[in-house]
Image (tube, rainbow, N blue to C red):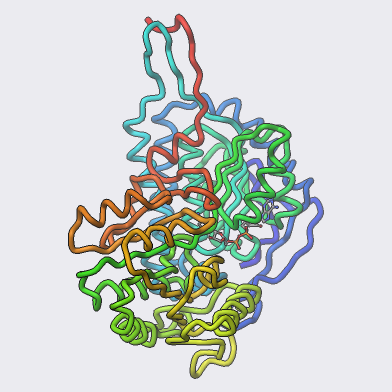
Length: 473
Ligand code: NAD
């Protein structure tokens, strides 16, 4: 767990200039390893390696790229538990979640991209014109810490499938799983320079990656704040910038649904991964007449979420860092100060835990649309319950957000639920608890971003389109 080197041009190399910092295990607050934070010069070295590799990798056949993807996929599956343990150590996910969801999200996306690539048409005829899909070039991939392998895989797999070369800068909070992926790319013989890994901070390595003229595209997942800065930084060189940003997703419960089921699932879904999922249904909207019933079910559901060490049988572990811990507790205090009804949880540490960044699963009721906890992304295990009188009011409240990542609707009448889904200004909507689908596009409207990852949409983001007039046979 010592990430003191970077993977550049097919080899592990020492940083040109680096500061080494501890990677903190959020469950113990003790160092779990170290990471070297690189400089702009390290980033540029990786960009130039990727630029050299693009000349040949962009010309590889689909069959060759499929072979690389399948080999990486097989290694991700083989090393699942090792990746899972690394993720638990760096960001605190409980072992069950790491082994059954966090680590397997890697092969899940590699597998989905393999399926897409096997059928994808890189050429199309339009009249007398041949339209070609070509790899866009060198890509900068910048990822967060909350689902670290998931976000890396949703970028690396389609970039390889497209024939692009890349520099990955994972979150400095979660470098371990990314280093294992670099080892895998090396072990399967991915050509030198196709995949490069540089650890570092946003304002040094990140800045160089998003402003360098030889980078054709930035694929970024993270906060809206950083997404805006990256877009500005990328503008002078007219790069493609694909953004997957924050969220404050609404969850509308229509009258008549089985409340016990819908509310219990909804609460669990917010708390999962300690509330650190961009698409978590953090604003629960219920008919005002049902508030008392909802309150009781939500209280029971939140209190049944066991918080504890990653290696225990807890449902949720700590949040990922001291910064998150302080920020989330600050929001809980604000919710109390602004007069929301504290149904469960609060700012105290969970019972029996006095070390580690653990937060009590918290539910607020009687949250009004103007409260801070109804508007800002908290990114912790905190649910805000709001009430509505009419479905139109619920839709307006749902859309009254700067974000537009996901939406959730529960209804006995599927057509009525679908009609509400159609009104939501979000990139995704789940009806009656339907799961995500790695073949379908993932992304948001408004301040939640402009990109679409996963499946065919994810591959197309890494492609340029060329019309060859008169090129058709
Ligand atoms: P963050 O924006 O602080 O950091 C994300 C990454 O960007 C890190 O690697 C960081 O080093 C880098 N970075 C920060 N500033 C940069 C800059 N100016 N230039 C270049 N790189 C920079 O976000 P985070 O705290 O790691 O992650 C949490 C956020 O990510 C939440 O807002 C969450 O909603 C969002 N997120 C979105 C999705 C999605 O698909 N929409 C998925 C997961 C997380």
